Image (cartoon, rainbow, N blue to C red; front, side):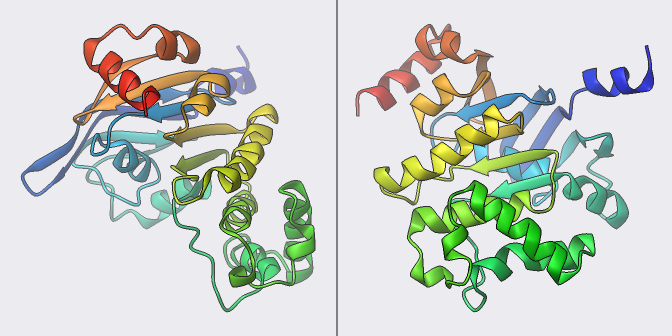
Length: 257
């Protein structure tokens, strides 16, 4: 087997025995997860189950208590938090989109997407702006390039945030309930962009309360509760025929709203 083939079959993300505690409260209780290149994994479950904490541990916005996180061949253990070079290499491969948009209000849309490219990737302003316009066109917002975030709707701001994350050429995108702060109509704009990314082969881990997205777009669904993965498998199989009583309770509750 040649080196390229070996790289292709190795998981892009590998989480092993991941634990995270805040004081005496254990939020993650030994999570194991692997994600292949091009795979879309949806994580669902009740509030407080550890979904967002898991995402934040993957890109090390939260340092974990035990276990390891490996992204694109870079492994971080609980004693690696001070290894800045390894952290930078790991985060360089990960783009993240949060519930809140976190755009710079004093910069126009184009600069919001370009500035990190210049600072992190060393691109010139002309190179960064060219890439930014490509991505703004991709998310349907090229006409907003000179506007400021306050002049854009919530759905538009979230699409700008997606373009900004993509601008750093990550190998994987993490989404933490990206539509939860939006009304349903604006949320559909964001979901459409995420569907396009999925169809284009982007590796994605998506914490979501959008059950249709989880069932129809993702390859695999994980259901979390009380800091553990209680069920996982092919998306439609898990969503339509859950095997555990806790998973059945959760899916029944969210579908009966």
